[in-house]
Image (cartoon, rainbow, N blue to C red; front, side, top):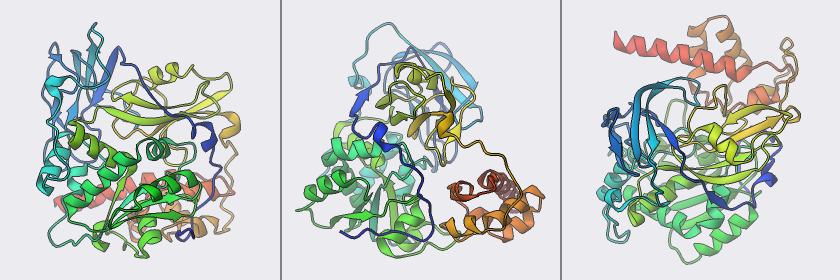
Length: 447
Protein backbone atom coordinates (compact mmCIF):
# COMPACT_ATOMS: atom_id res chain seq x y z
CA UNK A 1 0.00 0.00 0.00
CA UNK A 2 1.54 3.31 -1.09
CA UNK A 3 1.53 6.15 1.42
CA UNK A 4 0.32 9.63 0.53
CA UNK A 5 1.64 12.90 1.94
CA UNK A 6 2.12 16.66 1.43
CA UNK A 7 4.88 19.17 0.69
CA UNK A 8 7.30 20.14 3.48
CA UNK A 9 7.18 18.87 7.03
CA UNK A 10 9.77 17.31 9.34
CA UNK A 11 10.61 13.96 10.93
CA UNK A 12 11.12 14.38 14.68
CA UNK A 13 12.05 11.37 16.80
CA UNK A 14 8.78 9.64 17.66
CA UNK A 15 9.14 8.15 21.18
CA UNK A 16 5.88 6.23 20.56
CA UNK A 17 7.43 3.06 21.99
CA UNK A 18 7.05 4.43 25.52
CA UNK A 19 3.27 3.95 25.52
CA UNK A 20 1.97 2.51 22.23
CA UNK A 21 1.45 -0.98 23.68
CA UNK A 22 -0.12 0.21 26.94
CA UNK A 23 -3.91 -0.18 27.03
CA UNK A 24 -6.05 2.61 28.49
CA UNK A 25 -6.45 2.70 32.26
CA UNK A 26 -9.48 4.29 33.92
CA UNK A 27 -8.27 7.06 36.24
CA UNK A 28 -9.83 7.05 39.74
CA UNK A 29 -12.14 9.92 40.60
CA UNK A 30 -10.18 12.87 42.03
CA UNK A 31 -11.04 14.56 45.31
CA UNK A 32 -11.48 17.91 43.58
CA UNK A 33 -11.87 19.17 40.02
CA UNK A 34 -11.43 22.51 38.26
CA UNK A 35 -13.80 23.07 35.32
CA UNK A 36 -12.95 26.04 33.07
CA UNK A 37 -16.05 27.50 31.41
CA UNK A 38 -14.09 27.84 28.17
CA UNK A 39 -12.78 24.44 27.07
CA UNK A 40 -13.51 25.13 23.43
CA UNK A 41 -13.06 27.72 20.69
CA UNK A 42 -15.81 30.32 20.79
CA UNK A 43 -17.77 31.96 23.57
CA UNK A 44 -17.31 30.56 27.06
CA UNK A 45 -20.21 28.68 28.64
CA UNK A 46 -22.52 30.39 31.13
CA UNK A 47 -22.46 28.95 34.63
CA UNK A 48 -25.63 27.34 36.00
CA UNK A 49 -24.37 26.79 39.55
CA UNK A 50 -23.13 28.85 42.48
CA UNK A 51 -20.96 28.27 45.54
CA UNK A 52 -22.52 25.72 47.88
CA UNK A 53 -24.61 23.91 45.25
CA UNK A 54 -24.59 20.11 45.17
CA UNK A 55 -24.00 18.54 41.76
CA UNK A 56 -24.03 15.04 40.32
CA UNK A 57 -21.63 13.36 37.92
CA UNK A 58 -22.74 14.19 34.40
CA UNK A 59 -24.81 17.22 35.45
CA UNK A 60 -24.57 20.26 33.20
CA UNK A 61 -22.97 23.02 35.28
CA UNK A 62 -22.53 25.57 32.48
CA UNK A 63 -24.62 25.94 29.33
CA UNK A 64 -23.53 26.89 25.82
CA UNK A 65 -23.69 30.61 25.18
CA UNK A 66 -24.46 31.08 21.51
CA UNK A 67 -23.89 28.93 18.41
CA UNK A 68 -20.09 28.57 18.68
CA UNK A 69 -19.94 27.36 22.27
CA UNK A 70 -20.28 24.14 24.27
CA UNK A 71 -21.76 23.21 27.65
CA UNK A 72 -19.66 21.91 30.55
CA UNK A 73 -20.65 18.94 32.74
CA UNK A 74 -19.32 17.88 36.12
CA UNK A 75 -17.19 14.74 36.07
CA UNK A 76 -17.81 14.04 39.78
CA UNK A 77 -20.61 14.25 42.34
CA UNK A 78 -19.89 16.86 44.96
CA UNK A 79 -20.25 20.45 46.15
CA UNK A 80 -19.37 23.66 44.31
CA UNK A 81 -16.57 25.31 46.31
CA UNK A 82 -16.12 28.43 44.18
CA UNK A 83 -16.70 30.09 40.82
CA UNK A 84 -13.90 32.38 39.68
CA UNK A 85 -10.62 32.76 37.81
CA UNK A 86 -8.30 29.73 37.87
CA UNK A 87 -5.08 28.92 36.04
CA UNK A 88 -5.36 26.70 32.94
CA UNK A 89 -2.85 24.75 30.86
CA UNK A 90 -3.08 27.41 28.14
CA UNK A 91 -1.13 29.75 30.41
CA UNK A 92 -4.09 32.08 30.87
CA UNK A 93 -6.51 32.11 33.82
CA UNK A 94 -10.14 31.44 32.91
CA UNK A 95 -13.47 31.56 34.72
CA UNK A 96 -13.80 28.14 36.34
CA UNK A 97 -15.96 26.08 38.69
CA UNK A 98 -14.21 24.20 41.50
CA UNK A 99 -16.10 21.13 42.74
CA UNK A 100 -15.08 19.02 45.73
CA UNK A 101 -16.13 15.40 45.43
CA UNK A 102 -18.42 14.09 48.13
CA UNK A 103 -17.52 11.10 50.29
CA UNK A 104 -19.55 8.50 48.43
CA UNK A 105 -17.83 6.21 45.98
CA UNK A 106 -19.24 6.87 42.52
CA UNK A 107 -19.30 4.29 39.76
CA UNK A 108 -17.03 4.95 36.79
CA UNK A 109 -20.07 5.61 34.57
CA UNK A 110 -22.55 8.45 34.83
CA UNK A 111 -25.40 8.35 37.32
CA UNK A 112 -28.75 7.35 35.81
CA UNK A 113 -30.20 10.72 36.78
CA UNK A 114 -28.00 12.56 34.29
CA UNK A 115 -27.48 9.93 31.61
CA UNK A 116 -29.05 10.99 28.31
CA UNK A 117 -31.49 8.71 26.55
CA UNK A 118 -29.92 6.19 24.19
CA UNK A 119 -30.71 6.60 20.50
CA UNK A 120 -30.71 4.10 17.63
CA UNK A 121 -27.90 5.06 15.20
CA UNK A 122 -29.82 3.42 12.34
CA UNK A 123 -32.97 5.47 12.92
CA UNK A 124 -31.58 8.77 14.21
CA UNK A 125 -31.97 11.84 11.98
CA UNK A 126 -29.18 14.31 11.08
CA UNK A 127 -30.81 17.00 13.22
CA UNK A 128 -31.00 14.63 16.19
CA UNK A 129 -27.29 13.83 15.80
CA UNK A 130 -26.38 17.52 15.87
CA UNK A 131 -28.66 18.18 18.85
CA UNK A 132 -27.20 15.29 20.85
CA UNK A 133 -23.59 16.25 20.04
CA UNK A 134 -24.30 19.81 21.21
CA UNK A 135 -26.08 18.66 24.38
CA UNK A 136 -23.23 16.27 25.25
CA UNK A 137 -20.69 19.10 25.08
CA UNK A 138 -18.50 17.38 22.49
CA UNK A 139 -15.59 19.38 21.10
CA UNK A 140 -12.82 18.44 18.69
CA UNK A 141 -10.25 16.14 20.28
CA UNK A 142 -7.46 17.08 17.89
CA UNK A 143 -6.30 20.09 19.90
CA UNK A 144 -8.30 23.09 18.66
CA UNK A 145 -11.41 22.03 20.64
CA UNK A 146 -13.85 23.48 18.08
CA UNK A 147 -17.47 22.73 19.07
CA UNK A 148 -18.31 19.60 17.06
CA UNK A 149 -21.96 20.48 16.53
CA UNK A 150 -20.83 23.53 14.55
CA UNK A 151 -18.64 21.37 12.28
CA UNK A 152 -21.67 19.17 11.67
CA UNK A 153 -23.72 22.22 10.62
CA UNK A 154 -22.05 23.63 7.49
CA UNK A 155 -23.74 26.50 5.60
CA UNK A 156 -26.21 25.32 2.99
CA UNK A 157 -24.00 26.62 0.19
CA UNK A 158 -21.11 24.34 1.27
CA UNK A 159 -21.39 20.92 -0.34
CA UNK A 160 -19.51 18.32 1.72
CA UNK A 161 -18.46 15.17 -0.16
CA UNK A 162 -15.97 13.52 2.20
CA UNK A 163 -15.46 13.06 5.95
CA UNK A 164 -11.86 12.31 6.97
CA UNK A 165 -11.05 10.87 10.38
CA UNK A 166 -7.61 11.97 11.51
CA UNK A 167 -5.80 8.88 12.76
CA UNK A 168 -2.34 10.27 12.01
CA UNK A 169 -1.35 11.26 15.55
CA UNK A 170 1.78 12.83 14.08
CA UNK A 171 2.96 14.52 17.30
CA UNK A 172 5.79 12.58 18.99
CA UNK A 173 5.02 10.66 22.21
CA UNK A 174 1.22 10.73 21.88
CA UNK A 175 -0.49 7.34 21.44
CA UNK A 176 -4.05 7.83 22.69
CA UNK A 177 -5.56 7.87 19.17
CA UNK A 178 -3.62 4.70 18.35
CA UNK A 179 -5.01 3.00 21.46
CA UNK A 180 -8.53 4.09 20.51
CA UNK A 181 -8.08 2.53 17.05
CA UNK A 182 -6.79 -0.71 18.56
CA UNK A 183 -9.21 -0.96 21.48
CA UNK A 184 -12.47 0.51 20.10
CA UNK A 185 -12.44 0.09 16.31
CA UNK A 186 -16.16 -0.75 16.04
CA UNK A 187 -17.19 2.31 18.07
CA UNK A 188 -14.87 4.45 15.95
CA UNK A 189 -16.52 3.23 12.74
CA UNK A 190 -19.96 3.80 14.29
CA UNK A 191 -18.95 7.38 15.11
CA UNK A 192 -17.68 7.96 11.57
CA UNK A 193 -20.96 6.72 10.08
CA UNK A 194 -22.91 9.03 12.39
CA UNK A 195 -20.80 12.00 11.28
CA UNK A 196 -21.39 11.07 7.64
CA UNK A 197 -25.13 10.77 8.31
CA UNK A 198 -25.25 14.20 9.95
CA UNK A 199 -23.56 15.72 6.90
CA UNK A 200 -25.31 13.67 4.23
CA UNK A 201 -21.96 12.34 2.99
CA UNK A 202 -21.40 9.01 1.20
CA UNK A 203 -17.59 8.80 1.49
CA UNK A 204 -15.71 8.34 4.75
CA UNK A 205 -11.92 8.03 5.02
CA UNK A 206 -9.75 7.06 7.97
CA UNK A 207 -6.27 8.50 7.42
CA UNK A 208 -3.53 6.71 9.37
CA UNK A 209 0.24 7.23 9.27
CA UNK A 210 2.18 4.17 8.13
CA UNK A 211 4.02 3.90 11.46
CA UNK A 212 0.81 2.28 12.76
CA UNK A 213 0.56 -0.85 10.56
CA UNK A 214 -1.47 -2.80 13.12
CA UNK A 215 -4.15 -0.09 13.20
CA UNK A 216 -4.21 0.12 9.38
CA UNK A 217 -4.65 -3.65 9.10
CA UNK A 218 -7.29 -3.86 11.85
CA UNK A 219 -9.48 -1.06 10.51
CA UNK A 220 -9.05 -2.15 6.89
CA UNK A 221 -10.44 -5.56 7.86
CA UNK A 222 -13.24 -3.98 9.91
CA UNK A 223 -14.55 -1.89 6.99
CA UNK A 224 -14.08 -4.59 4.35
CA UNK A 225 -17.82 -4.91 3.84
CA UNK A 226 -18.78 -1.31 4.67
CA UNK A 227 -19.93 0.66 1.62
CA UNK A 228 -18.31 4.08 1.20
CA UNK A 229 -15.61 3.65 3.88
CA UNK A 230 -11.87 3.35 3.26
CA UNK A 231 -8.58 3.43 5.13
CA UNK A 232 -5.78 5.51 3.59
CA UNK A 233 -2.15 4.92 4.56
CA UNK A 234 -0.24 8.19 4.94
CA UNK A 235 3.47 8.85 5.12
CA UNK A 236 4.79 9.32 8.64
CA UNK A 237 5.71 12.99 8.72
CA UNK A 238 4.85 15.96 10.91
CA UNK A 239 2.36 17.73 10.62
CA UNK A 240 0.55 15.08 8.56
CA UNK A 241 -2.48 15.36 10.86
CA UNK A 242 -3.05 19.08 10.29
CA UNK A 243 -6.35 19.63 8.48
CA UNK A 244 -4.97 21.19 5.32
CA UNK A 245 -2.14 18.66 5.07
CA UNK A 246 -4.51 15.75 5.61
CA UNK A 247 -6.91 16.99 2.94
CA UNK A 248 -4.05 17.45 0.47
CA UNK A 249 -2.71 13.95 1.13
CA UNK A 250 -6.09 12.19 0.97
CA UNK A 251 -7.93 14.10 -1.77
CA UNK A 252 -5.22 16.04 -3.61
CA UNK A 253 -7.17 19.27 -2.99
CA UNK A 254 -5.55 22.38 -1.51
CA UNK A 255 -7.43 24.58 0.95
CA UNK A 256 -6.76 28.19 -0.14
CA UNK A 257 -5.31 30.65 2.40
CA UNK A 258 -8.04 32.02 4.63
CA UNK A 259 -10.47 29.26 3.67
CA UNK A 260 -11.77 26.28 5.63
CA UNK A 261 -11.83 22.53 4.81
CA UNK A 262 -15.54 22.75 4.00
CA UNK A 263 -14.65 25.18 1.18
CA UNK A 264 -13.14 22.20 -0.66
CA UNK A 265 -15.91 19.81 0.39
CA UNK A 266 -14.19 18.15 3.36
CA UNK A 267 -14.86 17.84 7.07
CA UNK A 268 -12.08 16.58 9.36
CA UNK A 269 -12.74 14.94 12.71
CA UNK A 270 -10.39 13.34 15.22
CA UNK A 271 -10.52 9.66 16.18
CA UNK A 272 -11.49 10.59 19.75
CA UNK A 273 -14.25 12.89 18.54
CA UNK A 274 -15.85 10.08 16.53
CA UNK A 275 -15.84 7.81 19.59
CA UNK A 276 -17.32 10.59 21.75
CA UNK A 277 -20.15 10.96 19.23
CA UNK A 278 -20.81 7.21 19.33
CA UNK A 279 -20.86 7.26 23.14
CA UNK A 280 -23.23 10.25 23.27
CA UNK A 281 -25.76 8.63 20.93
CA UNK A 282 -25.48 4.90 21.63
CA UNK A 283 -24.65 5.10 25.35
CA UNK A 284 -26.19 8.45 26.29
CA UNK A 285 -22.91 9.75 27.74
CA UNK A 286 -21.90 13.41 27.96
CA UNK A 287 -18.25 14.37 27.56
CA UNK A 288 -16.74 14.31 31.06
CA UNK A 289 -13.48 12.43 30.42
CA UNK A 290 -10.33 13.11 28.42
CA UNK A 291 -8.28 10.33 26.80
CA UNK A 292 -4.62 11.25 27.12
CA UNK A 293 -1.07 9.93 27.01
CA UNK A 294 1.29 10.55 29.93
CA UNK A 295 4.79 10.04 28.58
CA UNK A 296 8.38 11.22 28.35
CA UNK A 297 11.51 9.87 29.98
CA UNK A 298 10.86 12.12 32.96
CA UNK A 299 7.70 10.31 34.12
CA UNK A 300 8.25 7.18 36.18
CA UNK A 301 5.31 5.16 34.81
CA UNK A 302 4.14 6.24 31.34
CA UNK A 303 0.47 5.45 30.68
CA UNK A 304 -2.54 5.96 28.45
CA UNK A 305 -5.41 7.14 30.64
CA UNK A 306 -9.12 7.99 30.63
CA UNK A 307 -9.15 10.95 33.04
CA UNK A 308 -12.12 12.86 34.51
CA UNK A 309 -12.16 16.37 33.05
CA UNK A 310 -11.04 18.87 35.69
CA UNK A 311 -8.41 16.62 37.30
CA UNK A 312 -5.24 18.63 37.96
CA UNK A 313 -2.03 17.91 36.08
CA UNK A 314 -0.27 17.30 39.40
CA UNK A 315 -2.82 14.62 40.36
CA UNK A 316 -2.27 12.81 37.05
CA UNK A 317 1.51 12.96 37.43
CA UNK A 318 1.30 11.60 40.97
CA UNK A 319 -0.86 8.70 39.73
CA UNK A 320 1.90 7.85 37.24
CA UNK A 321 4.53 7.59 39.99
CA UNK A 322 5.79 11.17 39.85
CA UNK A 323 8.74 12.61 37.96
CA UNK A 324 12.35 11.48 37.75
CA UNK A 325 15.22 13.46 39.25
CA UNK A 326 16.44 14.56 35.80
CA UNK A 327 13.07 15.89 34.56
CA UNK A 328 13.24 19.52 33.46
CA UNK A 329 10.05 20.35 31.56
CA UNK A 330 6.34 19.47 31.61
CA UNK A 331 4.26 20.01 28.48
CA UNK A 332 0.50 19.65 27.99
CA UNK A 333 -0.19 18.37 24.49
CA UNK A 334 2.51 17.22 22.09
CA UNK A 335 6.09 18.53 22.08
CA UNK A 336 5.62 20.42 18.81
CA UNK A 337 2.44 22.39 19.53
CA UNK A 338 1.90 21.82 23.24
CA UNK A 339 2.27 24.34 26.05
CA UNK A 340 5.00 24.23 28.70
CA UNK A 341 3.54 24.36 32.21
CA UNK A 342 4.43 26.57 35.16
CA UNK A 343 1.45 25.71 37.39
CA UNK A 344 0.61 22.03 37.84
CA UNK A 345 -2.70 22.89 39.49
CA UNK A 346 -4.06 23.61 36.01
CA UNK A 347 -6.71 21.04 35.02
CA UNK A 348 -7.06 18.44 32.31
CA UNK A 349 -9.62 19.76 29.81
CA UNK A 350 -11.84 18.08 27.23
CA UNK A 351 -9.27 18.20 24.43
CA UNK A 352 -6.14 17.51 26.50
CA UNK A 353 -4.27 14.87 24.48
CA UNK A 354 -1.16 14.38 26.58
CA UNK A 355 1.01 15.33 29.52
CA UNK A 356 4.73 15.02 28.77
CA UNK A 357 7.49 15.07 31.36
CA UNK A 358 10.78 15.62 29.55
CA UNK A 359 14.37 15.21 30.69
CA UNK A 360 17.32 17.37 29.72
CA UNK A 361 18.25 14.87 27.01
CA UNK A 362 14.83 15.37 25.38
CA UNK A 363 14.84 19.18 25.49
CA UNK A 364 16.99 21.25 23.14
CA UNK A 365 18.65 24.10 25.01
CA UNK A 366 21.06 25.48 22.42
CA UNK A 367 21.86 29.22 22.36
CA UNK A 368 20.22 31.41 19.73
CA UNK A 369 22.46 32.84 17.01
CA UNK A 370 21.77 35.26 14.11
CA UNK A 371 19.75 33.95 11.16
CA UNK A 372 21.94 32.06 8.68
CA UNK A 373 19.66 32.76 5.68
CA UNK A 374 19.76 29.01 4.99
CA UNK A 375 16.10 28.71 4.04
CA UNK A 376 15.50 25.48 5.94
CA UNK A 377 12.41 26.93 7.65
CA UNK A 378 10.98 27.93 4.26
CA UNK A 379 11.53 24.45 2.84
CA UNK A 380 9.93 22.78 5.86
CA UNK A 381 6.87 25.03 6.10
CA UNK A 382 3.88 22.95 4.89
CA UNK A 383 1.98 26.15 4.02
CA UNK A 384 4.78 27.64 1.86
CA UNK A 385 5.23 30.68 4.11
CA UNK A 386 8.46 32.49 4.93
CA UNK A 387 8.79 31.95 8.70
CA UNK A 388 12.00 33.93 9.14
CA UNK A 389 10.41 37.01 7.53
CA UNK A 390 7.22 36.69 9.59
CA UNK A 391 9.23 36.33 12.81
CA UNK A 392 11.36 39.35 11.94
CA UNK A 393 8.31 41.51 11.22
CA UNK A 394 6.94 40.53 14.63
CA UNK A 395 10.21 41.39 16.37
CA UNK A 396 10.21 44.82 14.72
CA UNK A 397 6.49 45.46 15.47
CA UNK A 398 5.83 45.71 11.73
CA UNK A 399 2.45 44.07 12.02
CA UNK A 400 1.00 45.54 8.80
CA UNK A 401 3.86 43.94 6.89
CA UNK A 402 3.36 40.69 8.80
CA UNK A 403 -0.31 40.69 7.82
CA UNK A 404 0.59 41.25 4.20
CA UNK A 405 3.08 38.36 4.30
CA UNK A 406 0.35 35.98 5.47
CA UNK A 407 1.01 35.63 9.19
CA UNK A 408 -2.63 34.76 9.92
CA UNK A 409 -2.35 31.75 7.61
CA UNK A 410 0.29 30.17 9.90
CA UNK A 411 -1.07 27.22 11.92
CA UNK A 412 1.80 27.43 14.44
CA UNK A 413 2.90 23.83 13.82
CA UNK A 414 6.50 24.56 14.85
CA UNK A 415 8.27 22.94 11.91
CA UNK A 416 10.21 26.17 11.34
CA UNK A 417 11.58 26.30 14.87
CA UNK A 418 12.40 22.58 14.73
CA UNK A 419 14.52 22.95 11.60
CA UNK A 420 16.25 26.26 12.44
CA UNK A 421 20.03 25.69 12.91
CA UNK A 422 20.29 29.13 14.54
CA UNK A 423 17.81 28.05 17.26
CA UNK A 424 15.60 31.09 16.68
CA UNK A 425 12.17 30.68 18.36
CA UNK A 426 10.43 31.40 15.07
CA UNK A 427 7.01 30.01 15.92
CA UNK A 428 6.91 31.91 19.22
CA UNK A 429 7.61 35.21 17.46
CA UNK A 430 5.07 34.36 14.76
CA UNK A 431 2.46 33.46 17.39
CA UNK A 432 2.97 36.81 19.10
CA UNK A 433 2.71 38.71 15.83
CA UNK A 434 -0.33 36.73 14.77
CA UNK A 435 -2.14 37.70 17.98
CA UNK A 436 -1.36 41.36 17.34
CA UNK A 437 -2.56 41.16 13.73
CA UNK A 438 -5.78 39.40 14.70
CA UNK A 439 -6.42 42.13 17.28
CA UNK A 440 -5.83 44.77 14.58
CA UNK A 441 -8.30 43.03 12.29
CA UNK A 442 -10.87 42.83 15.07
CA UNK A 443 -10.52 46.55 15.78
CA UNK A 444 -10.90 47.37 12.08
CA UNK A 445 -14.09 45.31 11.88
CA UNK A 446 -15.53 47.06 14.94
CA UNK A 447 -15.13 50.53 13.40
